[in-house]
Length: 184
Image (cartoon, rainbow, N blue to C red; front, side, top):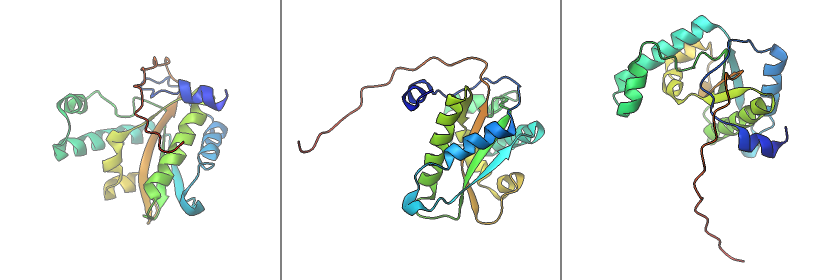
């Protein structure tokens, strides 16, 4: 698949087959991620690959409890998170957390760029992916960092689930962008 096809066909996938992913495929995704640009070429990212389904369920449960305690969720999201059966990782077989090494000025941006490369590469491999915002705040806590076994100085920024999609989500029409042209 060429890059334009991947850009136009990549969607957030929220239903996964239980089929595992080969280590070589996961390595290809990470190799694509590290091709992303980074501010002043710092390449200050690290990757944690979680395939332990029991750990993923535990993280889901703890992240949901953390979110509910924050009392800042919109009502429709609160209802989703309150559902005991709801798994924030949508039963995906793999979670890849992209963390910064340190808290540099552009750490978040660097990790986000790597995440987009990873998600486009996943699409090119016939996989689905989704950035799991529900996991972000809890993973940044001491307990969350411990669950990921993160070394000191690693800050989780981009929790991305990956797996074989049960189906391909339909494209949502894009709004016409606001474009301002300056100069000729």
